[in-house]
Length: 161
Image (cartoon, rainbow, N blue to C red; front, side, top):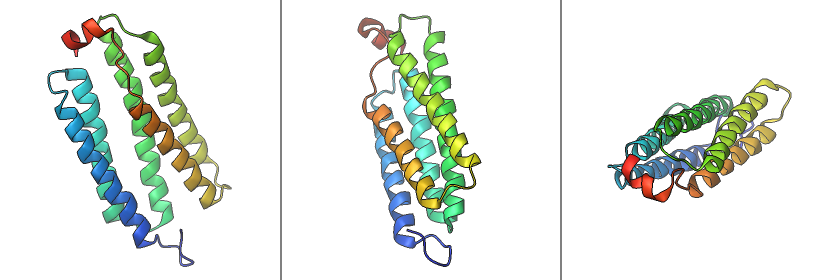
């Protein structure tokens, strides 16, 4: 995955960048279906923008694996904070919420944030281990998004969001 000269190979860079830009487009389309539901719309728009910025940044600025690590680190910390903020927004709606789902999303956000900080602070880790760890974090985030459940009771969901 890494060349012997330390630069990031073009096919990997293009694959990561283009796939995240496509994911951002899908995220924008998903957000547009939730236009009247302000919290859900904002949540999806923010994540779509983050994926778009990350994908474009990878295509334009990433030339070494070290740069990719830093861009990924920022994306994962952004995700962790956005999950925590999303949970606080749900609580501030003063509606009846499904606390189990909000708690799971909060815990996942905290786990992603803590795991990212741990990985970034251990300089002795090999690049392959860091890459696999970031891949695992992407999978956790993806599963969380794919298993997105409404966090409010069904009758109040349409009213509040």
